[in-house]
Structure formats: C-alpha cells, structure tokens
Image (cartoon, rainbow over all chains, first blue to last red; front, side, top):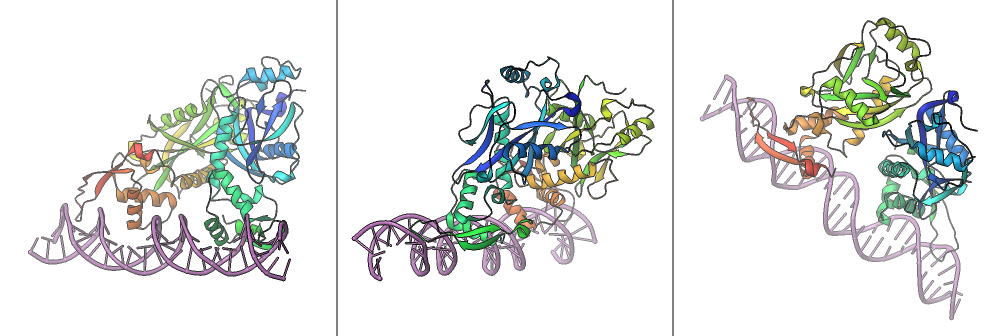
Length: 238
Length: 238
DNA sequence: CCTTTATTGTAGCAATTTGATACAATATAA
DNA sequence: TTATATTGTATCAAATTGCTACAATAAAGG
C-alpha cells in the first residue's frame, strides 16, 4: 500500500499547480484527502528509473486524463521544516494506514514545483487512491492548504505572470479555436487586471502568431467575433 | 574522508554558477579536481539539519570568502542519467579514495541550480579539499565541464538575462561605487550585445535607483565620469 | 423589414517611449 | 593654448502605446 523505498528517490518530491481557465476565472486542481480533510496540491515521488520531467508528466496525466501536457518548472522548495511528518501520519491514519516512524515518506523532502496549463473543458479530474476528491478551486478562493502548498501556489502565479510575455500561455489554457475576447480574459485572469480591449487586440495580432478562422455565431444579438488559433510554427519564436 | 550518509539528504545536491565581472568580461568560477583534471561547478550536498538556501550560501562562502552573497535559484536538473557515478569514481580514485559501489554519493542526484553575483575584486577563490584549483573562466571560453554542468551554465545565463530587467543585477557585480560606463559594460556582457550609450544612460537614470556621487579622476585625458551607487531603498521596487 | 442593442474590428490621433545625432563640457597631454 | 577622447544632455525623428471614435454586424422586437 505504501510506496516502497527502493523504487523511489529519497528526499525529493514534486508538486504541480495545474491551471485551468473557465472563461472567467483561473482555477487550479486541489486534492482533498479522505477523512482527514487536508487539502493539497497534486504531487508525487520520482521513480529511480524515471526522468524528473516524466514523473511529473505522468502525475498530471493521472489526475487530468490528458496526454498532451504543458509543463513549466518554476521553483524548488527546500526549507528545513517545510515537510511535516505529522501531517503525513495524520493523513495516513485517516486512511487506516499506520506508518512506521522511520518510513521514508516521513523523512524531509525537497519538492520541485511545476505548473501546468490545460484546457479546462477537456479535463475529467480523478482523485488518487488516497484522496476523496480532486476539484477545481478559484485562485482567489482556495481552501487552507497543507504544509507550504499555498506558498507554492503563490510562486507558480508569479512565474506564470512572468512567462506571459514570453511564452504563448493562452495556447494551452484555451481550446484549439477561441475568440479574441477569450484570449484577453485569460490574460486578465492571470495578470489580475483589466487590459484595454483595442490595444490588446492590436498588440497580439501584430505578433503574427494567430491564424484567423471563420466567425463564431453564438446567437447573441451583436456582431459575431472571429475565431483564432495559434500558428504553432510562428509561436515557437516567443 | 567521504561525507557520511546520515548527515546529508540523499539524491539531492546543488550546483552554483558564480558570476564575476572583470570590467570587460563575465566570468564564472570553475573547480578543477586533482589529478583527474575534471572541471566542475562548485556544488555540494544538503545537510539534514540545514535549509537548502543556507547550504548553498555556505558553499559559496567557502569558495569565495565572501559573507554577503546574492543568490538566485534558477532551475533544477533531474534527467535520469545526468549524474554519472563513473565520473565520481574516477575523481575519487585520482584522489586516492576508493568508494564502495553502493556509496550514496554514487547514487542518482537531482541538482538544484543557483547563480550568484559577486564583486570580482573582493574574491579570493579557494579550492575545496578535493580540488586542485578554482579559477575564473570567461563565459565564452569555458573548459569542457563534467556531466551536465555546461547545460547548467547555459540555463544560468538564460536566467540572469531574464532577471536583468527586473532585479538590480549590477548592484552585486560591481563595487559600491561605479561609473555609468562600468554599469553599461555589465549589461553588455550579460546580454552579449552592445547597448546605445545615451539611451542606456537615460533609461537607467529615469528609473531613479541610482545616487550620484563625486567624479572619478582616472588620469585619462578626458572629461571625468561621475560615480554612482545604487539607492537600495528605491532599487527594492525592481 | 426596419429599428434597436450589444459587441467587434479597426482607424486615427495624442501621449509616451525609444533611437539616433549633435554638441557643449571637461581632464589631461602635448 | 591647443588637441583629443570621453561624458552628460538636448533635440528631433521614429516607433509604440493609450484613448476615443465609429462603422459593421447578428439577433431581438416591434
């Protein structure tokens, strides 16, 4: 039931901040452990025969069901008392698992933080075997997270804001085709500020990384917006 | 002689890219191991009773003799085969140390990369007990580094370029007082491109993070430049 | 169908920022 | 005193961004 010591690296783990965009808000996936009611970021350990990146990718795949996953490493957390064996024991106990005091998962862990960007609509979140549930929570209304997970989320947000100008972030948070308004809403949600509609449109179009497609007729009583997609070749340069 | 297993975390190490600026070039500190002639970044292991950041700080202090050290974490390297036990064995052997095959330092390591910015002139590099020498090498003329250390250097450079606009990088690479030309040279060395003298001066002055002091009379047959220092309070905002 | 309403796409001009050039003000040597 | 290299700024052109305006719809409601 417990992961075996010889299969995994000691003292290292990863945690992922999985971002999705609802159309209005940025949300992230949070696990809730059975009975203990502890909230945590999805994470895991690294198998000895596995690249770090593969371990993270596999972890996100299991939670989201997606296979194509955009990942960015943003920070590694190594404070002395960041991992808390008591919390781990408590979670185990609530699950009916009694851990030996010297079990390796109760040792100190340095954790590597990754953020992931996914298309909210494509995801069917699935809990792991220790968890009750996994749910989307708005960035601004997170439950109290265990250990230093809130700090990890904060750093992830800082990182994604930083990357926004450099990498085509929207590409991963939106479906294949999207309207200019949706793209702008993504930027606004990430930056947590309003952007000027016309300036945004001009700037993003002048980058030349978008392809324009047919119009989207939503049924609303107004001019229908064009759909766009990212021109992946050109977007590479950013 | 070898570090003991119960004192350090397993499977995790750190490596540091220590930048100095000579006035013309960006250089970094590289260790050369005795006899084996292997070149490596200064690095180390993390004691179980020590914050990650403290471990790195202590490591840089030992190599540079400095106590006030600017550190930035930039990336964590976790490829499956990045650490190479054969190299470690070879280095040990050249030092007259025969390692048991199952010794923990021969295990797989995930390493956390930090870069450090220091005042070149204040540093007296000192090798560790396993090393022949520690020397400054120009960024553009590095010897062949062991394992994935060149990749780590490349990532560090990428990171420092990225941070240049955000953090007052010059502050740490220059002495307390410096001329505008020196500051510009730092930027040029990091970005590896020439910057327009007048535009640079206007821009950096308009940030309002510099204090102007007396002139510097070098003896050169031309107008003497002012000396500047960073206004640390105002520089915080960047 | 014609009008109304909400939204979209883009033009146009002002304000700001950046690029490029010019030039006055030195320190020192000759 | 004159010549020379460099520094600090001013100036104006060019590019970018902020802001407003307005025409072009898509559907609803008479």
